[in-house]
Amino acid sequence: MNSFHFAELIHQQAKVYETRTALKYCNEETGIWKKISWREFSDLVMLTAKAMAEFGIMEYENIGVYAQNMPQCLITDFAAFANRAVPVPMYATSSPAQVEYIVNDAEISTIFVGEQLQYNNAFIVHKNSPGLKRLIVFDTKVRLYPEDKTSVYFDDFVCLGDNAHADTKVKIRMKAAIPEDIATIIYTSGTTGDSKGVVLCHSNFLEAIRIHGIRLPVITDKQTSMCFLPLTHIFEKAWTYVCLCKGVTVAINRDSKRIQQALTEIHPTMMCNVPRFWEKVYTGVHDKISEYPPFLQKIAWRAVKTGYMHNMEYKNKGLKVPLWLKLKFGFYDRIIFTKLKKVLGVERGVLFPVAGAPLSDEVNVFLQSVNIPIAYGYGLSETTATVSFCPRESFTIGSIGVVMPDLQVKIDEKNQEILVKGKTVTPGYYKRPEADSLAFTEDGFFRTGDAGRLDGDVLYFTERIKDLYKTSNGKYIAPQAIEMLMSNDKFISQIAVVGDQRKFVGALIVPDFDMLRVYASQKGIPFTDDEDLVKSPDIFRLIEARVEERQKDLASYEKIKRFILLPFPFSLENMELTDTLKLRRRVIFEKYAGLIESMYKE
Image (cartoon, rainbow, N blue to C red):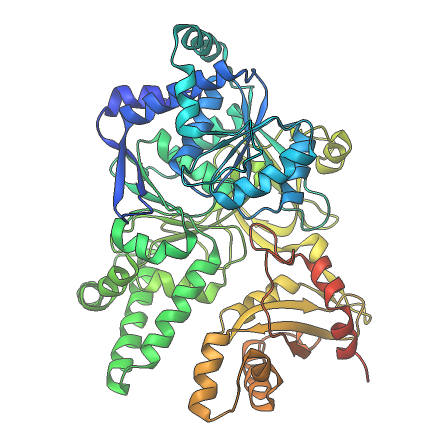
């Protein structure tokens, strides 16, 4: 299939697929999933594009999209592309200050907002930022402020452009659209400083679609993908665009808390996700098996072992599976694995890409063994997502996959930094020439900020270079690697490893309080709230034992020697997490400086 410029993609797809379903979304009031055909999708995009033109949105103008996942987000994106305008996504969880920063930096005069929270926050920005002229509201249930005289509901907005003049203007702009036009500006989550706008052109996305087509022929118009991660996230945005280009039906999940129910209602064949989702699946399955009688536990673990032999020792290595193993695996797949996947809603799964953070080998191997087709990979906003990922067969556990076709990757000899060059790499940051000069080598390779190694075309991730700690004894510590070891434990929800310029490694640990409450009740440990739990010597000894078990294979200087249990989780609201749920280490270490110091007192 041809890869059309995004200005015309949806309309070309409508010619091919007509009444077939392009999008699905859940009606929030009835709970019923609704369908939008390709023809309806095309008509809505064109109507919105004409409204933009009529409203005075110019070519190359930046427009904000501040909403949770909704069909209107994609409609707005492709309507903007038709006008050669640039949609700038913002996380639905962003604070007014974060929105204001992007509005001012990208000189945005129009924001499309989702629900009441986004409208309220955006209206605060509207009052404080003279450049922001208007808000367009997706959700008709949003109540506008009485003093708000400029905002308009999306349904009313799209009717404004239904005239011949706007139609002509949009068609002229569509004809003029070129691959070098800016498609979007993705603002980084700012773990180490101010957020920067990553410029991505249509040519970046078109190349991403081309190379994914080479590597992933499984993406066809017979698939259904669950859109779960925020469309602000480059992983979900790029993946969804690839799906639309291939004629895949995209089911849009609006409420992240409802994902488990949504999966059992849609039964998608594909879904991209971050490791944390699958870590919870892994922990949940282990907990469920531990509740079985001993005889059934033995059967379950025998099934997992059989799955490992079939999928990892034979199939993944390209070896012929012995008949006895094929029959045994088929039996366990029918009576155990398929039932497990049905409970999760992923029994029709064909491909589940996983990226955005390190995935432990333990979780990866388990999921492969129970026949859940995850594909672990690596990428950044600056590389239009994928740099590498593990193919469905002949992949290497411990790696972050095989480098994508026609992409150049090399390792900097000085600090082992992963360097990337190719047509999916950003041309630079929005109006940040000084950042560009630091981000690229003299021969045009992008500096990822990640350390790694390359074995042929198989890439390995070591650590975020800026996250590396050096203890006072001169030993280098990779905190993410230690945190990943702990994250698979059912009693540990979050952990921030401490150790830079310290004489040993410490940690701030947020326990999984749901699991702790059950444990405390079973063991007769008295408590009235979560603060009581973290103060309990019995609970401390439990976590201490879990930590020791998890780090038994680490070198002595890498091991956590002391830790403090926190009664509250790290959160977006407290600015301790980025919008992609990564730790803001600087914020955490400043907030808990007193507790950290107490760990290191003799």
